[in-house]
Image (cartoon, rainbow, N blue to C red):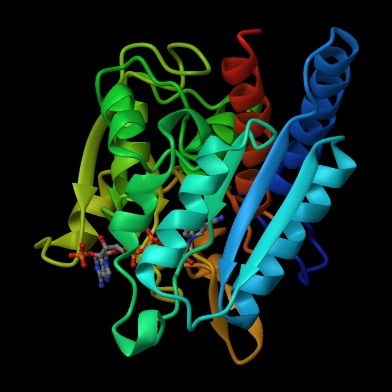
Length: 313
Ligand code: NAP
C-alpha cells in the first residue's frame, strides 16, 4: 500500500494514504483467473458471461468492450450480443429469455442505460428487462431475489461495485466495525447495497468490514456537511463532480469516492480530491480507485454463476 508521501520540497504534499484500487483489482483478477483454471481442470465448464448491448451509446460500448477483455484475460468466455435500438421491448425480453435457457451462458449482463429512444420511440421498461434475467445468472445482482437474499444477510451474488468497495477496505486492512459510515447516495446499484453490506453482522470479508453504524444521505438530507463530518468513513456515490469538499470531511476519515464524472474530457470523482487528501487519512483516487474493482468482482460473480449452475460449489 502506498503510504503517506510527505515532501519537504513543497511541490507534493500528501497526507492521505492512496487506496490503490487498480492494484487490488489486478490481484483479484489474478486470483479469479487461477480459480477458473482449477475449476476447468476439475471438469467444470468454462464460465461464460454474455453482455447485452442495445444501441450505440459510446460509453456503454467502451464498458462492454472492457468487460469482454477482462473475461478473456482471466480465462472466461466474454460474449457481447449487440442489438439495434429499434428492437421492441418484447424482442429484448425474448433475447434475455433465450440466454436464460442457454446452458452455455452462465452470466447475463444487460448494459445500462437502455436507449431512451428505443422500443420504437416508447423507451424500454428497464426494470421489466432486468426482472427477466434468471436469478442464477444475475451476475450484476439486480434481481429482486438476489437483492432480497443480500438484505437477509445470506447473499448469493453481491453487487459488483459495493463488493469491490468491501474488498478494497478489507485488503487495505481498514476496519469499519463499530464505526460511523456515511453513504451519500441511495441508488439500487451502489448506495443502498453498500450501506446494507457494511451494516451486516457478518460481511463477505468477515466482521471487520461489516458491523458499521451506517447513515444513508441523499438529495433531501438536511445538514449534509455536518453529517458527512461525523463520518469515520465517508462513501460518496452521488454523480455530482467534486461535491464533497474538504470541510465536509472529518480529519483522519477514510474517503471512498465511487463517482465517475466526465468533465471537459477528464474523469473526476464526487470528491474534490486535491483538497480532500489533505484532510483524510486514506482516499481512493478517480480514476484508479473503485472503478477497476467493479469489473474484477463481475469476473468473480461469473465464476460463481458457473459453479452454481454446474452444481460444483
Ligand atoms: P444515481 O442513481 O444517480 O444516484 C445518485 C444518488 O445521489 C441519489 O440517491 C441522489 O439522491 C444522490 N444525490 C444527488 N445529488 C445529491 C446532492 N446534491 N446531495 C446529496 N445527495 C445527492 O447514481 P449511482 O448509479 O449510484 O452512481 C453514483 C456515481 O457513481 C456516478 O458518478 C456513477 O458514474 C458512479 N458509479 C461508478 C461505478 C464504478 O465505479 N464502477 C459504478 C456505478 C456508479 P436522490 O435519491 O434524492 O435523488
